[in-house]
Image (cartoon, rainbow over all chains, first blue to last red; front, side, top):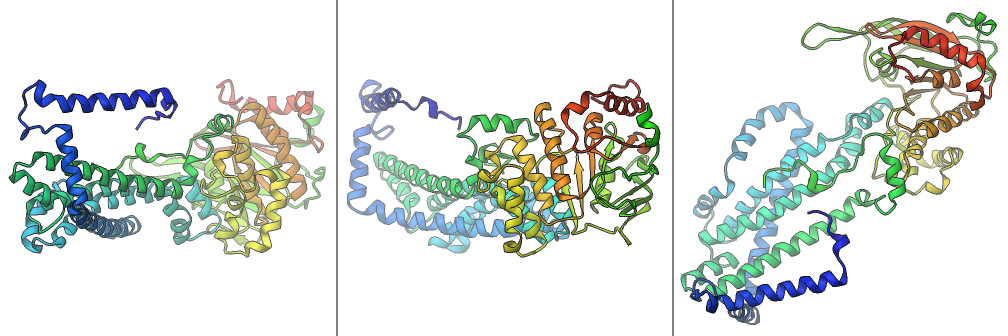
Length: 287
Length: 279
């Protein structure tokens, strides 16, 4: 995302709110204006009613909790495995040599295509969703961990070695913290993919969950209900991402330093290559 | 020209040095050192038959254009790279890898952005698993010596380039090494900051009485700082001349405009022809 904070004035906020109202009004009016039937595009008010009904009855809360559990469990499982295997690959060249062909093979495969198999193997319960979510979360985490651990600055490695430091010390004092920006970026991608993996697997066959709920609403032509679940999913995705960004800002505190003092920064620029990286600029794994 | 009379070879008498260092030059003995870089294709000779003895407490500058192997020499002395031929001896022991009593300063400050200034300075203590508490006051003194006491708890990103390099220098001193290896430490700084840093480094050296090997591509910087200047020429990297700099300490920036200073600079520059590689 480009830095838009300078545009964030009271005036622009009001304009932005007006724009939202305009969009809602056009949406609300479009079934009448363009003669679109409600089972194709429900009006904004119909979606709002569907949302309210689902929320007040506790229906969305129950299915949302199931989906959230599957997402988080898959994310944690895949993320941890990806981190562990990434560390192993980065540390052991022999291990990397033997495992790389499999990694490349799996990487070029659309992982969600395995979801039907997982439903077949693990059934309609939460397990098949967690496995899919874990699989799609695994790869970006592993790949970002590998490139992160290999991103350690050569001079910094030399510094530790010149002091008689061991490779273990190079790893703990340098490689790991150097990898953190990459790992945090990997977590963001993994989380977004976990949500996709979970919902898609729920579409394919589930006992509960927002994806399954949406699928059954589609069968009943309740398009307004489907839309309202899309809104819930967007809110869930956005909230999870915001939590991760908050964690990232805490963990990578040094990336935000120095920005408040442009004079000191300009001076730093003369001192050779910068060591700053932001997550968005990373050569992260495939989306 | 009279000034240069006794300053022609490496064997010239170093007794004039006011640093109080030992007059013997057997602290470090570099004996017939050569370095070949292999890989695919023909091998490249980075260093050829380097012979140099450095005395305890001596300030030696190595000057030469890019590709003359000066950084390779430093990496060998730091124990980061083996020689292809010849030996390096520290005292009575052959150099076989990194030593605990050497401090290295690189061209960039090489700070860890997630560590505060104080924690950056303490990196050698952490790496060598020494007692942090014992070295804390020394670290603070060194930080104070380069005028950064107020920035002790700041992070590198909050410091200017010159301040960062000062942190890099005192870090190399914190574990009280016998020798400092400095690889063009001020190369990335602007001219004004650089001169200021030269004055500061001389002050630091006089206060700490360390042996320093200082690599630079600036002739005037080498003459200003060093007891002896080693002139290197490229392809293959070899020593062309070793020159004693017979200027009194403590040297001032004003001295850089005096005739003797200019004479040294002229003499060193003569080795590089008119290639324009030096400033």
